Length: 438
Ligand SMILES: *Cc1c(COP(=O)(O)O)cnc(C)c1O
Image (cartoon, protein in one colour):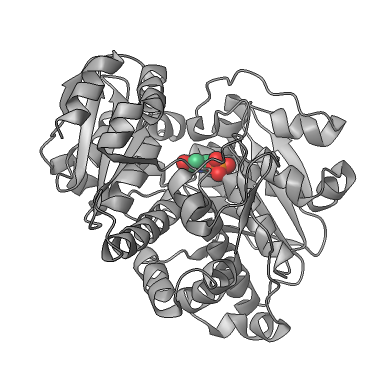
């Protein structure tokens, strides 16, 4: 399968190139040239299949031409080492809990898959005599991406990860998830802000001497290997709801920031997944919501909210959605409606849901739950994505709900680990010198 750029100004790429490069030469996003429909028999029997069986079938459609079946299925099964259960919150609203992975957030799925696929390509390259050896992943983080990527790549042979994060500016819970790992993960504590970290990574990719010295790649969320595997759990969500007899008019609500998550679901629909419609739930960053209302896409500076993983003012995957629907605003509006909530509304929803149902939402999932409560029509059943465990935002959640959210064992284990990090300045020369000596 070949991949083309949404900007149409770059040559087609193989899967391997698209995964290693991340972004096309024209700064566009890679799209698969074809999206294969899955047979009706698959959907007829889907409720009898396991998550891994479903995911292997979907992965075959995306990657089966480029990765041998046995290798691909191993990558899928290793990725999905945890369940994604659909949990009842009310009679008509279910929560798809995506937080049972190693870092308790949905980004675990994409990060784990990408790490294993990159590991596969790297091993293949070495067999073919590629002397440059190990692949070095550079990732700048303001908190959550670093932990999902570091844990996704932990222990994957042939790959080393450098996580750059702003000193003193990520929460202790977030910091321990990428500074205590050791092995093939190095945490670099940058004396600066997130933008400095990102600038260092960008400079590294552009530095000819450094690139001649070592193989560098990014694990950005726009990478096809991080984004496409997210479609797996929409198929599984449908299967679970079908088993309950609740899938005939299924509405899926996705708390959205960069729109990668919802976009992977739309790929699923193109493959035949019978979801009736979608709701994209935003926090106060309402760029997509406004696009649906007006037909105009007008990026803005992001505003800070309590659902901070959705604080995005120029969602990068909008380009993919636009491409998928041939730039047809009316067609996009037929499949997706929007919602946008202030911090006060998010907090109120978290309190009310806990009181009325006993279910503890995190601030991101709260946007999804509320949009279903307000937007479900007669006969429809809704499922929203609970994108992170509430304990990841313990400070905010406890102060809103007045409780004491229990910290899951997995998270507590990170907090017991020994912090290991290397302090660096925000000047590129110092960072480069460090990498040249690695
Ligand atoms: C990344 C993230 C989101 C937003 O997902 P997109 O794919 O960027 O739309 C929502 N919730 C949480 C907890 C996240 O980490």
